[in-house]
Length: 119
View 1 (cartoon, one colour):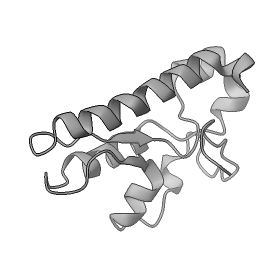
View 2 (cartoon, one colour; view 1 turned 180 degrees about the vertical axis):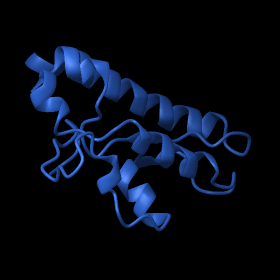
View 3 (tube, one colour; view 1 turned 45 degrees about the vertical axis):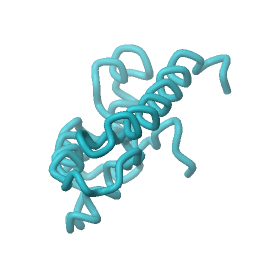
């Protein structure tokens, strides 16, 4: 696993350690959490480095992360911190039942999963 993904793995692991550490360090003042995508997100990196149009067509748009982030960021300070949220779970918990509008290619249902989530 590490050979083809070492930089991404290090970044995710580092982010995770920061979330856990800062959630405790800033408890009661700032709620520190992480938000991970359930599927690949249509970004320039996906388009240019990770597979071009073929992979990009199996992605969701960045708007799903923005919408999920809004729900995480507007939680009360008393809500648990040090959490690792998944975009689609956050939106479903907020009552969003149709995520099809986030598909980079309308109508696509065969979405590429994020690297670090169990299928």
